Image 1 (cartoon, helix red, strand yellow):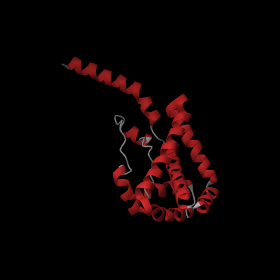
Image 2 (tube, rainbow, N blue to C red):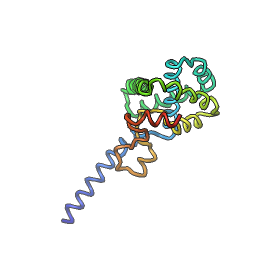
Image 3 (cartoon, rainbow, N blue to C red):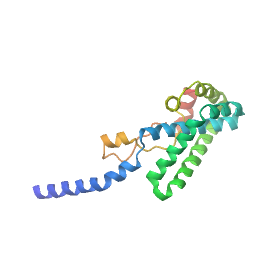
Length: 182
């Protein structure tokens, strides 16, 4: 019995040694999380600009945070290269498309309330002073972000965890959450 336990322990250790780097590679680093939140906010404001005819507000946001937005895009691109290798560009394109589609659908679900709910987000975003404050605001305002990989810090503390928990409400509850938070 003791020998079987030792063999199982040895196999489990080998599996963790082999799987550990792969798990670490698929996680989101702190600077990447900030970039994903910033990109989600930018996309949400772009959807709002198109839907609610707020082009001037969106352009002011892009002008004010142009460097931060470009840096966020580059960070996300690097993340997908790291996690998807040769398929990194495809993964990045898929993420950006999914992000815009889901945010647009969220606007459709809100119906006539969408513009009323989203317009104050422009003023709050323009009042921020840095990428990190924008990312924090994005999380506080529960801006929809479909990319749900666990943070690397979580992976280090719980290496056996393979399924991240969602911080965003489920699609059926999202409209209500967005309405309350805006």
